[in-house]
Image (tube, rainbow, N blue to C red; front, side):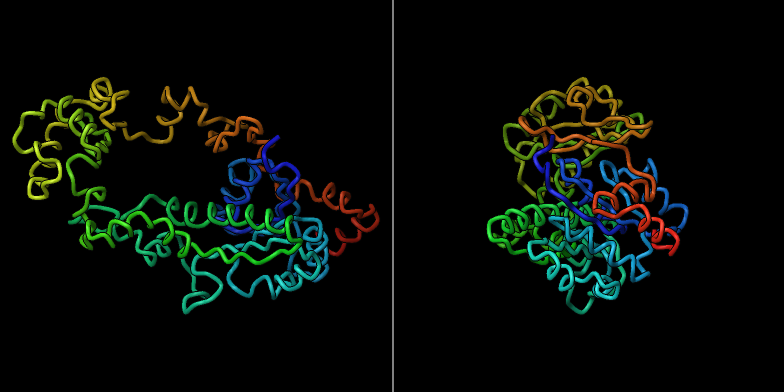
Length: 383
């Protein structure tokens, strides 16, 4: 029984951060009902990750399939919304209103509802109605600029910074906060969760550095953006990679000692920028003299701030992750386990991702729909 047991969420199926937000809440015990588009076909690649057992972000949810372009389907959706604590939608501004499911309608029906709107650019602003993806949102937020080496174009991990961090997690926090407030006041509200806003908030520490004058506007010129020899990734003799992040002096000194560089003049002043470029080249050459496993044997488990760079298969097999059960397998699908950990109300994955519309009849029955009405909805093509 997770900490959100008893909370009811309705999610209007979409791509990216909306379903991830619903997954986070479902992992923590919320009852998440996802309204999927009846008979929708978004293409083989998209359907692969939005439907069936590989749609990890749908784990733990119930599914009802509706043709939301049918006005009768909107009435069914409103019955589900009436019985929910929060709603998640991820369309462009105005789409939910055209479906008859806008916030005014829903809040009139359910005044305590938390209406979560997940978009890239937000509900207002010059770009609000433009298409975009994770890379565009983090670019506009300033976060992408500092990712990468000075001599190369910026790059960032796919979907993690914007869709997940600035989007799904921010909306999940907003929904939980909104529900807490609604239970105190009886009043719901709309949450405008823009990935651009959320990602900007995530850069607050870097803004602290920048405003204090210790972070320049030049990419690859700062302490944790690939400029320094002691914070970055390096290729090993076997073509694999390791990471070091020895920011503090005591960790840096240990790293230098372990690597045999403690007495080298180019490494005796950690924050001397004039030495960084040459020292980085020397460390790159050094790390290429041994395999990744050999460097792990020397540095892993010490305070040198070290870790091997692992792919998905390797990460799941690493002893630390196996000990913590960070990854698990459900129906043959390897996936990350719920996080964070709760001592008294542990999170869990209650079920595999549902088939499209798998729970349609049971959901309608729980709302009081009788079999003749369900058959009528099926005949009309609503379900």
